Length: 609
Image 1 (tube, rainbow, N blue to C red):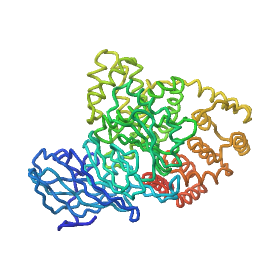
Image 2: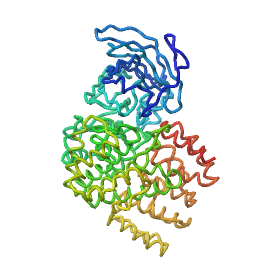
Image 3: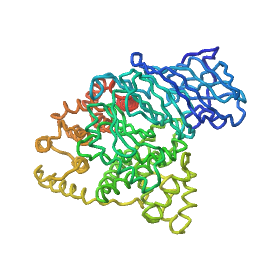
Image 4: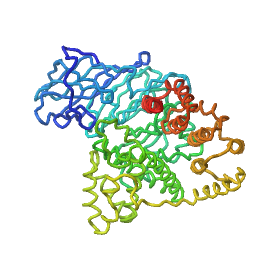
């Protein structure tokens, strides 16, 4: 941190609430005016963050969150428009939370301006060389602010309880396009200057920026896709049903509130499947499978436009309110478009993933199998597990099964409209659920079993059972193979990605010749479908099938999605030889991973020593 204007280098340790140093309950930010210049040579953003504030308590200071930012100077402006530079202080630096930026204000201060620049090691920002992109012609930049990484590229009140509108001016090299979680251009500007506006209040984790050589193609009345030129046609073909998804979502739970819904297909180092930035979902290219079999991810990110973006978890301990609702909503969108059987197949796979996570966590950290988590003193990323997503989804599905879909859908529409553009927490949700729904029938509250679902470990006995005829067909093939040990007995005609995943996850203790026979018959090593590749390479490691290792290493060096990296690294770390291989692969691949993924794997390697 740069200490300017007479700043103390070691300010007192600051109070932390909701993973934030900010005093948002005393002084709240209502609007952000951002001005940025993107420097690809230095891998830095230079600019000014001007925050419109409401001093609700007559406080004499505004406290913002920062991390790996260099603050150059700070000014305050009063209601008469008079501005003056002030001396700021920086709190002690914490490895997770960063450092507090403490700014003196007066009772009539209406805005605060912070001139600053980022550092190349900002964890939210990934700067990609041309070689790391799909077309390999131009550099690329993208942000990932969730959960508390917005503070690494903007000084602000970085917690989900604070919502604000924003406008921004961004200057980039003229041959590149800038995009944000706001109203976006559909073509490049001639001078590289872009203006953005987000008129709906959002939390800080939904601040997003991307800069690259991208083009746009409309997909319908209020939807479209951005991608590198070499990826655009494939992306358009993959997302042909996106407008139908928007229409189906609106029919279920009310009007889409954000104007446009567009998707940006990012380079492969993006650490997640998608990020629900308002107006512009960021998506991994690994969902471009060529057969539209992985578009449930788009349904998921679209559903966030209601659960998460419209109604936001107040704290990261309430994360399940964002994700559990979204997975449930995703399921309903997929059912509406592709039918009940298809949606149930996806749900059954989710149930299997949930059980796997429960088995691990019940051994290592049973309290983390609760929906409401205690994340005090922890990185909120610790809560990003299948518990929030899948246990949350099955809790909501259990309510649907108790009260009936008609009552449940009416409740959800009311929930979203009542809390629109606001935040809620677990306690308030329970109260709203009891008042607006469960109180209608004395038997419903007992049957729903809310407290056990939310505050107890593991899964309640009333967890819904999912029956998928399609996956039962896979299980029958596995049973037949286990008796005959003949790969020919695994009939894969008509298999989708989801059939393959269920097959690979149910095959156990295969011999080398069986792995080789499967590989020869189904051509799994080197397959272009990342979902299938991940499970095949995990199975290869578990069964010592070294013929797949070369392609596995290429896969780990070319894909940055954490969902695909972790199972393979975890399998490698189970043996001494695997540990050495994992360390060598990570050494060569680390520069291509986003900080979020790299940090997780780095921790895994340390724990394995």
